[in-house]
Length: 443
Image 1 (tube, rainbow, N blue to C red):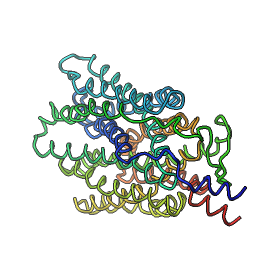
Image 2: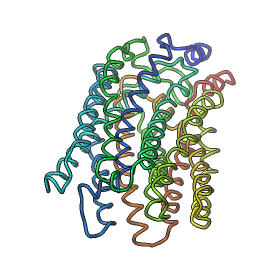
Image 3: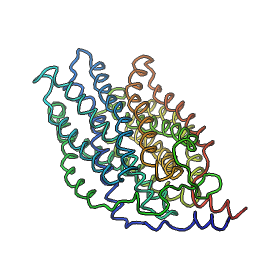
Image 4: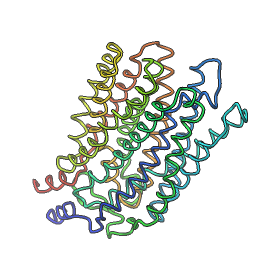
């Protein structure tokens, strides 16, 4: 029996797909995150366009609050589109989320300013943000499930790491666009129409994305283990319908994703931080996005590859603890030296560690769940972590900075979150096939 279990863990899944088809999934995922995150990077300008106020801080807070509103509909999208991926297929779920995102992006980019249509402007912006949140909430579950199912079992980590890598690739693209616009345009042009151009650039790719995704093969019913998942203790394939047997990994996954989300959006906040706290030029502020992404994308892929070889937990925990001890010192360096080079170097270091530590989280959660609930469960857990903490992080950091006047406030908030993540990483069971197979051989 033990030998049979080893074989079930070690042999490749027979539905392994060509890399070009998997690339079609992650490209669509990256494009969606480009458009969703562009709002955050241009929050200062969007706030002035749609939420005029006598206080620049109040205008920014209203803009960030609307940014956060998009996270309110993420769980709804996750609970509707995610389970759809389990019932009728990953592909139709991915098509729906991508199409809705396209509608929201174009609508937001073309909404007239408050000066032109008055109170209708912020209402329309809020509506399109809610649609964006709904669409993105339903995106992560089906795409991550697809990546895991498209991979040979010994390469799940690398394939699933493309989920995070393409998200940060999208951040890099947004950073390049933002930096280029900041270099070419003056402050008034950025305010008047520059941020709209950044959004419309992403919108031009929507038709291409829809065509590419429509040609993907379906993975939901492509294998004969549709209702099976590897037991996290023995590695044996077991049939356990429903969510109840997987509540432990779901809760731990939520804790890990919460910590990773706060860290990710704290890093994303560095653009606003550079503008409002460090008072650096817009070109420098947007340049930090490029620096951070350059250090994220390759190491997220590396993290996935390493987790296939050495297991998910070591790859999470080692850089995770180093990150914990690095956050406050990094912010101290940034605020003390107040130079572009130290700012970029500190952000690069934090991105490097976060990329290594966070990537195996989504892999562990996804491969620990059975195919029959995988898309819906991953979508819902991810959406709740993002909606509660991702949507509130930038607002919270702005509020903390205003209340305390302490430029280290973001570092303290992020450090506290990392304690939660590290605790869950210690408690979660190893799920990497290479580790499960080795454990069975030892028995």
